[in-house]
Length: 505
Figure 1 (cartoon, rainbow, N blue to C red):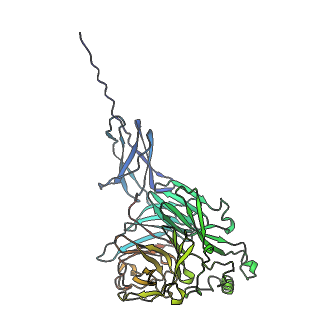
Figure 2: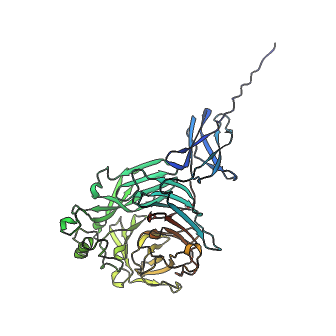
Figure 3: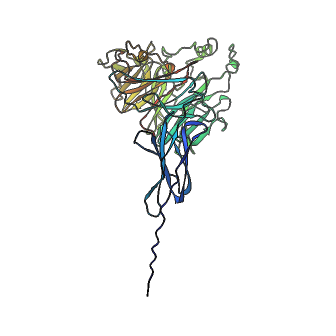
């Protein structure tokens, strides 16, 4: 008897070639559409034509129709791509054929009139990979931009709901956190997904400038998001009878808000709950006549120093968060930094660099003699103060004609603060480094320590980011690397922060 044996073999999974189309509102992101003839998870791999290193998108969920977004692209380039899937039956990898697509040139704001120029010091090499910063031209709303060390834009995002005053940004895995001053908090994924939003105006908290409003700073600690808060009182300047000030408002008091990882529960801390006020007269950087003589000037000069007055004598321009939690608080108008134990409700110390009597440290700052130049034993108009590896790192304006990054070591037991390193911000003379001069950046900017040991500093008023490796305060060598932004008409809007980004992932 003849016996027939049938062998059934599952057909191999097939993947259609992706069709990659530029997004309507972002010229450096492409949506790649593909399909499989059986439910599977799919990703797209892409790379610049003529190179070998492939960049994969995340895997899709299981299905037969798939859209994957390619990002981190450069303009005016030809890219190659294919789709691949893991066969759910055999486990084998199925791939489509390779296709090509071309990215367009960057057009529209801010790219119509924005120029980025990057330059490394002759004989040197930058250690930063990418820089993230908000910027715009001619007063237009700011756009978040990531540029590589060659000054080429590799990612950008126009903020929804307006981004005309980005006051803080932070990077997280897969995207960025953005704070638009007194209005929005965003989490935006690199693929353009708006993960979540808090609109303080819609929530009724920040209507007409009342508080609490997000302001000045944004931090991540232990998976939780911290924002600076500012609350404006109900009085207008006009109510005080000050000429020309009708309708203007002022900040009342500052604090911090901590969001849990889901942004569902919050905890607030207000500085006046600790009975802490700057313990000095205003420092030399504080100008009571600015910005409008006869308006803010008359008000501030008439009431400054009265702890009962509803004015913002503790206006926090920067803060950092330590585990505990504890806050490192910067009050630039008083040239003062303090550490507040938020859990215990006490002020651990204050640091003022001008006079010993103005600090709870016995010696406010001593100077390491190895710092050759710009060795003023003080800081002034400081900004972006952080606690890094047991030291304070800050952008310091010295109350003079130059700006530097300071690293200050603290011995809380001995009551001594030691200026350990000073990096002076200098102009590179258009890339020639012939006679670099010190830069003056007021209090808008940032300072980060890179893994290489160098520092990355921002001078917002000059539209410049610098990597500095000479911790002696001199200007003879110039920066190791710099990125300059300029606009064909008007000044730079933004550049308030420039964050180092190690990799795009």
